[in-house]
Length: 407
Ligand SMILES: Cc1cc2nc3c(=O)[nH]c(=O)nc-3n(C[C@H](O)[C@H](O)[C@H](O)COP(=O)(O)OP(=O)(O)OC[C@H]3O[C@@H](n4cnc5c(N)ncnc54)[C@H](O)[C@@H]3O)c2cc1C
View 1 (cartoon, protein in one colour):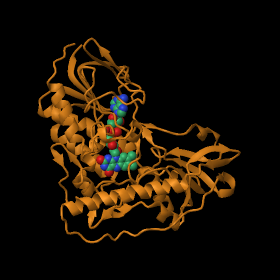
View 2 (cartoon, rainbow, N blue to C red):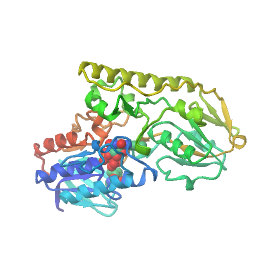
View 3 (cartoon, rainbow, N blue to C red):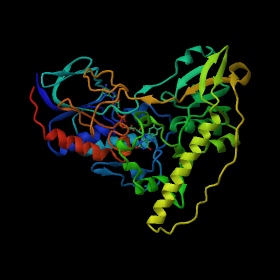
View 4 (cartoon, helix red, strand yellow):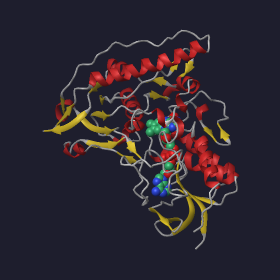
C-alpha cells in the first residue's frame, strides 16, 4: 500500500493553510474532507450569517483579502467562495466527501480509516475545527413535545420554526445574532443570557478588530489563560450585520426582547431559570469597560489623535423571571445556542488531556508526526481565526518537514 507523507484531515481554513505550506515546500500530501471545502461555513451557519471580524482579517497564507471592501463583513457564501478560490490558487490534492472515521498509530506512522478504504501516512495534521459537536443540556428531553427544538448549528432561517414565540438559550455570537434577526422579523424572542463579554463594534472611529490587533489582544498566548476552562469562554458579542453593529443585550431588552437567566431545568411544562441574569449582564459590561480601558491605554501610549467616544450607555435592568410556562407564554420554539465543541472521537491515540484538549505545544504533540491546527488558543487567541491561522500552519509544517519518520 502506498504511504503518503502527510495526511491533513479537514479542508477548512486551517487544513487549507497547512496544505498551502506543504505545497510550497513540495511535501507530498492529501487533504481529506468529510464534506466540501469550507464545510463548516456551508452547513453550520445560518443563511444571513456575516463574518464578525472585518474582511481585512482574512489573511490566509499567500491569499490575504484583496477585494474592495476591507472594512465590510462578508457573507458565509462569499467566504466559502473565497476558500474555494484559495484552493484553486495552489491546487492541492483534496479528497472531498472523505470522512476520516478512525485515526490510529500504525508502526511509526498512522493508519487513516475512511468508510471504504485505509490510507497510511507518515504524518498527520488534524484540522477538523474547534466547533464540531453541538452541546445541548440533558433537560432538553423534558421540554414539552409540542415545542420545536433546534441547535443554532442547524438553524438556517425562520422558515424552519413553528409560528409562535422563540426561546433562545445562550448569548454567544450565534445566539445573540440569531435573536436580533428574529426580533427584527417581528417574532417574539425570549433570550437566556450567558456570561459573555461584549465589545464595542467601533470605538473612537475604528473597528474594534483594528484595536484588538494593535493592542496585541489577538496575540495573547495560552499562557495568559487563567484556567483551562477559559479556553472555551464565549467570544465577545459582536455582529457583522448591516455593515457591523454592537450587540448590547440591555439595548435589546429595551427594544422588546425579553431577557432571562440561564436555563436550568424543565419542570411541569415550565423552563426554570437561574437567578444570574443581573450578574451575567454585569459581567458583559465589565468586560466592555476593561476592553475600553485597554484601548484608551494604547491610544494614550501611542499619543493617537482620535475622535471622542460616541457609544451610548444604556441603563436598563430587566426584571428577573423565575420560570416560563411554554403554553401561556406562547413559546413554541427553542434554539439551543449553547455552544459547540471539537470532536476528536475518531482519534484513537492517547494524546488528550482530561478536558479532551490535545496535549500540544504550538500544534506539535509528543506523538511523533501528529499535529493539530485551528483550535482556540492552540497557541494564541488568533489560532482559530482567519487572521491567525497562517502563523500556526507555517510553524507546524516547518516542524514536520524537519522530522524524519518511516513506516
Ligand atoms: C458565529 C460564529 C462567528 C464566527 N466569526 C468568525 C469571524 O468573523 N472570523 C473568523 O476568523 N472566525 C470566525 N468564527 C470562527 C470560525 O468559524 C472557526 O474558528 C473556523 O471555522 C475554524 O477553521 P478550521 O479550519 O479550524 O475549522 P473548520 O472550518 O470547522 O474546518 C474543519 C473541517 O474539517 C472537516 N472535518 C471534521 N471532521 C472530519 C473528519 N473526521 N474527516 C474529514 N473531515 C472532517 C469539516 O467538515 C470542516 O470542513 C466564527 C465562528 C462562529 C461559530
